[in-house]
Amino acid sequence: MSRIQARFQLDYPEFSLAVELDLPGRGVTALFGHSGSGKTTLLRLIAGLIQVRDGHLTVNGEVWQEGETFRPTHQRPLGYVFQEASLFPHLTARGNLAYGMKRVGNAMDRQALEQAVELLGIAHLLDRRPHQLSGGERQRVAIARALALHPKLLLMDEPLAALDLKRKQEILPYLERLHDALDIPVLYVSHAPDEVARLADTVVLLEQGRVRAQGTVTEVFSRLDLALAQDQGASTLIECTVAGHDDEDALTRVTFAGGHLWLGRLQRPLGARVRVRIHARDVSLALVEPTSSTILNILPARIQELREIEPAQVLVKLALGEAQDTTLLARITRLSANRLGLQVGLSVFAQVKTVALMD
Ligand SMILES: Nc1ncnc2c1ncn2[C@@H]1O[C@H](COP(=O)(O)OP(=O)(O)OP(=O)(O)O)[C@@H](O)[C@H]1O
Image (cartoon, rainbow, N blue to C red; front, side):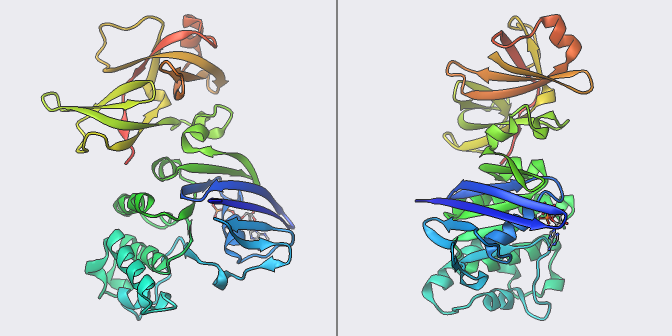
């Protein structure tokens, strides 16, 4: 079965972790949570760098830990990328890649290496030493080195955390390419909602060593009971398909289950899948359809849930379209919610001020 199933329990003097996970065997799963929530500890348990009794781990049908069985780290086909690229300073990028490979010359590995070099766009950097590379380029070499081992699981522990914003922006497109090109699962540790929104398919939200929520990125981001939705930057992610371009007005129309949205002109072909992000604070509500508004995106919606949050604001979870299986969050003032008499089940019109492309 193509899943990752894990169960671990661990007790440190001042921290305990108890998790049970059942994750897709493909795509990117973000292990997300505050500092100290146990993300790295969980990754190290999965890598076999920490051993606990009675743990359980299967990766796409292979048992890595169960009862007396415990595969040590070097017998687990995994790639591990750390915050700081730990490259050997005296070796070129090529040397570092070769050093990482245990069975150089094996046709499979050579193919994996070539694919990794191509995916990370580092062919022109192979003869440079680490000090001749930027932080982002070093990290790309480190990711390629992990992939060249032809792993069955890729673990990434905050691979962007040590980079400044500019370098982060530079490396994100490569991580997105990985997301599309790899058919192995990736576990990606992060405490940055933006990164998770952009890269993850599945999210495991950790709090104090426990799984607080687990689900698709769209589900977890739109749960009103979680801090993510209550944050100032709260947003909804919607998977869309490019449906048309209007070159005269420099706009692109994308469709989703139950509706469509207009965005600034995208350089994407018709039929391309795109993920868009709508900030809850950019959505306002009206009881009747606004006919004279400058806002392009006005969506009929039904109120599913309301939650009051500080300071005197209300989070509104909306269901869009006939089937109501697309969710949208709005963050409005309590005063407006009261004035409009908002309640669960009410039909409204959501005006969306800005729609941003996530990839
Ligand atoms: N070997 C250890 N012995 C005792 N406590 C530990 C050990 N390793 C980690 N801890 C504690 O476990 C908790 C979780 O640490 P962990 O590194 O997994 O968190 P994290 O979510 O990855 O945090 P960050 O985002 O800051 O990296 C922390 O409180 C940490 O102090």
